[in-house]
Amino acid sequence: MQHPKLKERQIEIFRTIMATNSMTAAARHLGVSQPNLSIAIKRLEDQLGIALFARISGRLVPTQEAELIFAEVERVNQQSEMLSELIYSIARGDASTFRFGSTPSLGVRLIPKALRRLQLEGTAGTYYSDSLSQRDVRDYLLFGQGACVATIAEVNDPVIETTKVASAGLVCVVPKDHRLAGKKTVTPLDIAHEPLISFGATTTHGLFIDETYRRWGVSRETAVYVHFVEAALSFVSEGIGITILDAFSAINCEAFGLVAIPVENSVSVSAYVHICQLRPRQKGVDSLIDALRDIANASIKNDAAQ
Image 1 (spheres, one colour):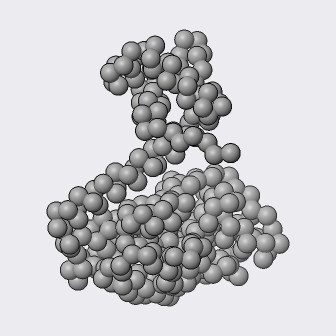
Image 2: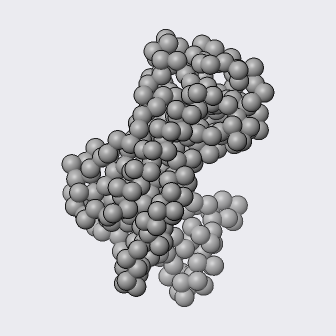
Image 3: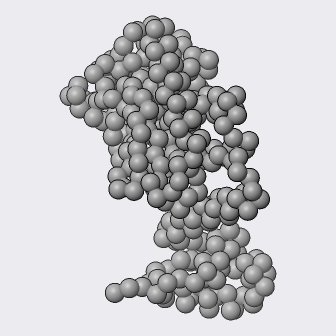
């Protein structure tokens, strides 16, 4: 049975209430009476078959379902704004704009270096570098929000073309004064008693790390869970613990007082650039691939030699 499509006004009302945390403030912002706003939310709740808000000690409190819906509404709204800006850019005749995305693993180190090279080459006049979560990559490409996406995860879609840029293993990142800092390699057994800053089991990094641990016959014990590599590196810098990342994320980490040690017998992690085959291939895509490939290979080779 197909559900009736939600109206834009319903989503606007819900989003405004979530943003203001008040029926009164939301009604004032939307230019409607509070009773009419309450009726609209009740109709939305009836349509969805769930409660969105509750009154607790006189306060309007969103339910867990409302929080999850709001997160998705904000994600789609952000994508809509990105698309709108891209349309205006085209309308202005700004043909020298190159927009691309990346997930955090490559966005921390490789993308800034590649963007610097693109600037020197004069690939475009204006650049938009979007940071994406893995789940947003497919829509970003299919809806033409950017020319390509660089990530360490594959995208299984028949209209998405994937180019492998480079491959590397996992590394253990520790402070430069850590007891392990002088080792050439480490194993999961070596760090078994260290506080590990790591990722959920279903994330891209979590899957790579757990597979490596299985090769050594041990289970991963995580002390601090994070979502992004930037957080993992920051926490290591603060001496909270150590972390395991793909080698791309840890390039030049010694500049921040950290040391990246290769993990023995780790899985191989590849860096990819994805494009949508349904759209014309921009010149900047191939320039970005070349820059990422050269920088990744040179940086990893240099780090291994140190």
